[in-house]
View 1 (cartoon, rainbow, N blue to C red):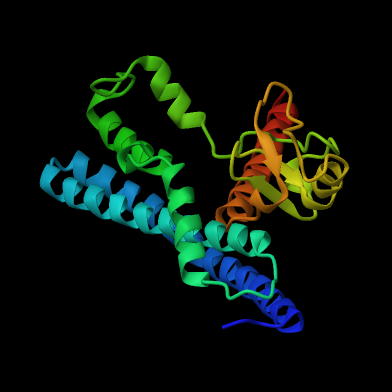
View 2: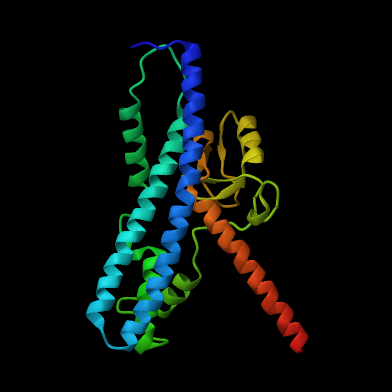
Length: 246
């Protein structure tokens, strides 16, 4: 069935509103999952101290399932936004189902398929391992791996390369689905416009070519930025306390 240009324009607007709403609705769910995983980690540590490995394993399996659901939500939301950004109204019939499935499959293919190596899951395992093996690397890992896991984050750049502002101060942060770097949306869009909608990532040393439709505000981004904001405040309080003690 063909659609008119006017009707297609209305569809595009509704799609953008739906994508924005879906992302916003996903954020509290993902935030609650992350809080639940942290709580389960504390409970698992207690169970490990009580020498109840079977109970710890049950919690670990539940954590893997929860993190998997969280990742699926992020993937789905990001795919919706990319698909919406890419959609161009036209006169010909558009098979939305096929296009979206293709976009979601492409997005999933670029994500890590090994959930047990997810940062939250590894931190869960490390907390349990450290109950009886403090300071020792887990089987198959080196000491450096432990340090990296404890400090690593999905946030790859702490400032926007174009504005110089910390990402915690960005008005509308977006993340590139290709290289995972973060930018101020208005500024990066202007940058890409000057490059005919395709330009190399402005992060020094990053070889990825950016596309406007692949810049999204996935539901996890705002959560991670808020976590970084809280962490920065805690660090400032600690530094202030240490200065007063001196």
